[in-house]
Image (cartoon, rainbow, N blue to C red; front, side, top):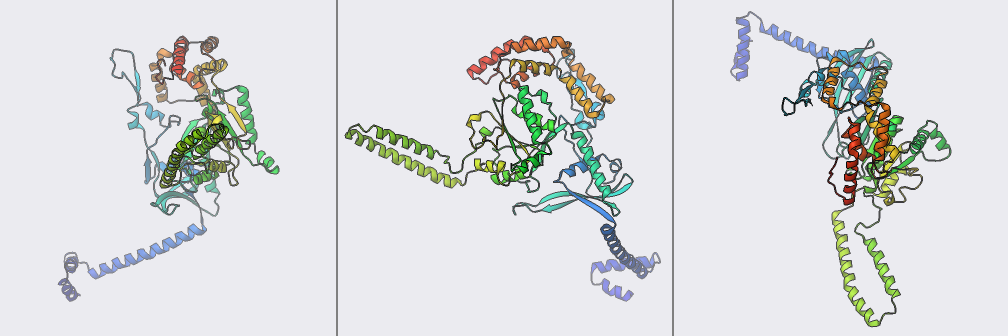
Amino acid sequence: MDTLLTTAGSVSPLSQLLLFVYKLLGAQFGIDPSLLLTAVGFIWGFSKIFNQVYFYLESVIQRFLMCSVQISEDDHIYDHVMKFLAQHPSLKRSKQLTAQTVYRSAWDDDDEEEEEGKALFLTSGGDDETTDNRYLNFSRQAATSPPRYIPGLGRTGFWYKSTYFRLFRFKESFANSGGWGPMKDVESVEIACYGRSIVPIKELLADAKALYWKDMAQKTTIYRPRSKELRRDYNMWQQVARRPVRPIRTVVLDNKEKHNVLADVNEYLHPATPRWYASRGIPLRRGYLFHGPPGTGKTSFSFALAGVFGIDIYVISLQDASVTEEDLAVLFTKLPRRCVILLEDIDSAGLRREGADADGEGKGKEKDKKKDSKSKDNGSASSDSESDSSSDEEPVKSRKKGRRRGQSETQRKRGPKKGISLSGLLNAIDGVASHEGRVLIMTTNKPESLDEALVRPGRVDVQVEFGHASAFQVAELFQRMYEAPRVAKKAQESRSDGPVKKPAAAKQNNMIYEQTNSAYKIDIDEDEMKDIAVEFSRRIPEGKFSPAEVQGFLLKRKKSPRRALEEVHAWVEASLKQKETKSKVVKVQ
């Protein structure tokens, strides 16, 4: 053995190193290197056998003694599960976590209000320190807001309701549906439990869904189409906002008209309606056209309707260049069973009829026909004048033909026209393969400019006109503006099924907020408020201002109803003068 090692040591430096270690173990430590090598080989072989047996037993257990459910991040249930796992006590103590920065909107419930409240303080805003003006400062809250922790990628275990669950988060790469572009990573989560029954996993998913929708009961979710790069056949929509349900009473509209629309939508969404429609061969569709000047509440009424019936809103912009006619048809097919699909400002969407020339060739032909008819009517003119006029018209016509020829060549160079045609929109709305069961709402400022095919019965079943505010509506808007805090408090108590118990930091926040607004406290009783509202409505010309304009004026004086009454006359005069001159500069706000 020694002779073999000596011979091998003269071959390479690595062999010399092994020879040195061999002699060191034998001479210095008295260990037989051959026995050590045998032990190492035995351990290595045993580990390989153990791993094979372990993975074989694990595969057998997973196949016959475990149940599992896999969820893709493209599904809404994924959000339910992630929120549930982020709040689970045992997973918060896990050794493998993923930290996420939480971006909350103004409407999200602040679970960390206690921690963030400690960082809220007042500042003078650079004014003289001797003044009483104090302003809220939120600079410290970014540093104190904790991230959200969710299970990291890989395997994690946790207990829930006396059942042990195994969680496996992983990513898979998928090719683009079009066959081009980079691969996209899609995250998935697999939940498994021991036993032959999948009921524990279903109960966990049901609890996660209940927890998620507990916060969503009083909110409306808005969806828009995903960007073209992220758009896939099974995931066309993305959530963009979540807002509190807007009470229907806050929409400025004639009460009779409002209740008629509510009753019509309620009848359409009734569970027995689909069978009634099917038995009579009527497509299950309902379309509404909200028309009126800007700022009259068309979009607000759409959100309020969704809140009343507890359904979500799906908004499509027909001016989006990334949405083709094929995408529009697929987007309509991927809608849930009951929802509101909103098409805003349909008059400015640039819908075109197929076959119509965008360069105005059709109009030119009509003008030529009119000229020909006029020339025939003027047949009593002299032959000399006719020859002169014909000679003058020939070069003009040739120039027109050349211009049209050049325009058509330019159009061919530009390629096919982009955008959605009228026929493409109509096929998506009520085509053979169109989605049924949704509430379609279209809004427009110019209803007369819409194509007749778009507003015919069957596509638009109910038209609702939104006009400028009447005196009664102005008074109602005034009263609602100054009773809003009480309404919000009642809504918050109804969501929590009882009085709201705020932590100490939240109470401190309210105290700080009251200090900054102490000069604007409302000390008016209900009767006086009604009198002020009536007087306020008298000072605003009826049918001249939209509800949005009146609301904007009141928002700047939301703590001072008397101040609003005193300053409304100057605001009305300045606004009417601005409208007469068509100026965009606001003199009085």
